[in-house]
Length: 358
Image (cartoon, rainbow, N blue to C red; front, side):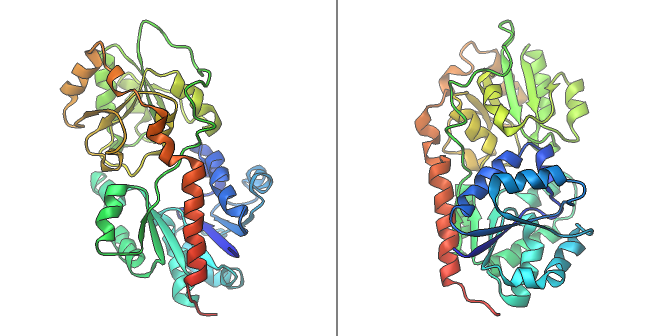
């Protein structure tokens, strides 16, 4: 592999990734690429505001780091290849981490035929519908990706299988978990109150996660419902009885998982959730929404997100979590050592086979 450009979602800087606890995970992901060739990470942050993060990024990854400039919105993302044409032309392939990161690489492809690979995880049209927002921009991006992407990585196997029927360039590349970090024997971050069982959620506190009804049911069942993350639903969750403890650094998460009696993922929409893999790797039983087709092959007690009385009955059961306790074999196929080398190998194949304009 010669030179790979990595692109996050438009507007995403190192600061925003640090604020959501994902920066350490990014370092691990990028290390799979820096071990094989030159790497440039394209960020929407500003060096003056994020100097300490930029310096740490260099130390951790050894990758080049370039910024979009003062205009980090959609317009700036589309103009970025024009402003920085010399640098973009040196890229052998663009690796886009999210559908929302596609605009600048689409422009680079239209201008110079720089090939690109896009990851699809979240169901953005579905999320927009839940929020009452228009879906036409996302649909337009999806059509562009389907037509021009050299490869599409989909972390949800069911969705990948559906898409592959009409697009042979779709590959199932699941989310990964670091089994050296996430283990059942990790010391607990917070002692349990033995009078109350602890239910844990890790992720964004947004409406599509369906958390407020769970908080209400957990309070009625006298459970301690702990939410690790941030988002607009935080105040409402606190009023509903949840303990919202904010964003926890990735390296501290294992101890939080092992402190829980069970993990819950009540979302209406998900791809292949990283937090669920981490919880299972720590040996934590899980409650999963039946709407999550990306989790069909993973163990957990299933419940309908529209049937909170059934969830309440499950919480009151004496054996509420014992029947869905995971084993290491459950998450072994998603180990970092297996998933990331396969992803990099696919990108390398693209570099060797793609043709482009000078």
